[in-house]
Image 1 (tube, helix red, strand yellow):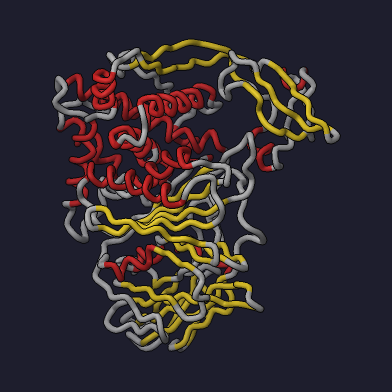
Image 2: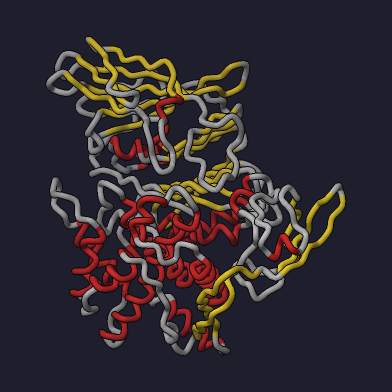
Length: 579
């Protein structure tokens, strides 16, 4: 799953605008209002209303929604853009307008936003990052909807709901956090998530005085209240570790089409004070635990331990995504949401995927170039950063004789980044890390970063990483090979696509165009276990069996817990979670 981090700007105090009437914008604030547009009872568009004062020189550049993450050209979903208070308006490319007016003149921008999808979004190998406007519901990231005065991310802002939403509809947005005491800026408006509709439910909980809301739509296999409780337990545990945030928080969850007996998709997108989850409806609450933990950790990594580079932030995804995974693992085990078995099972799944990755030894430059183009490249920085965090944690514990671990490094980075004077240049997280690690006595990270990150050297976890609690075995085995293009097959509704005729699957009788009902047995990533697929052919089901052996060999590491009693288990939970 991918989770990108457009950063919130420095925050200034703002007030929540009234829901009734056009929002006024006294002083320097930018006022946003969102309203619905219906046609014969069906939601067809979202209406955006923005009021702010022009730049002092009378020339203001208005940035329209343009791009974020894997999506481009958001401006194509805008309709009927109008700017009142301007003397003239000129295009600066399709994604911007140059507005000339009297100096500091009041400007009023209005437009409609239509859906980026013709139907409910489905699983296509990525998260639905376009604006969703459906007849009975809507969901969007702020990047796809809200325009803003250029260069004014730190400018105070406020948000209000316009009239016209049906009373039965529930709505939830982190844009509402301004009314809950959190200062808002334009950057927060852009970096937001919003969900509303006829079948949306909102669960509200309180943790240490902070309001945490879980907004969901659709029908799920799990109880909504239980999922909200689970989310709060994860968020509360992580906040307890960092102990520096008590703001309101929002989690949204929407279904995406495409789930089956063989495919479950779960993804997410982290915000500063919220995160959005997307899942096929066959996902269960247990499967969502990791994604909730990962996305919530993005509140701190890298936002509060440093910044990402202004250009090609994919360069540093090994830190922002890999370290986030490391702390998702740790905090889930610390809080008791995960058992030791859950922890090792997830780690083994990642180790297996890494061993089979066709880009395992690709240099970091390949990640920068191809992150958005294929799934193995997308997963590689998550894997590398996770394994490096385990290595560096063990090294620091060893060198400090158990007095320090990786937690001390990340907390020191947090303190350094948060102490940066207002207006000072941002501190890049990957630049802070080596100094913070060396200051704790861990030594020089430069050789590891050069070897494993820049050049793509394979990473092996030490056999004694979890000494006394688990053993790590390293073995070579034939490369796992399904034989077909798994991503294309999923996108085709589990119809076999891209099957190669030189594979065991083809020799067993499988062919392109056959419909997969489910996997009967076998372990994805493990060529040592026979694979069995139930296939639908002419209305009848048939099971095909084969050994999923490909060309070449891979090095696979496996973590196995040692036998232990309850006392030993409690001790291992502490040591393996870094307590």
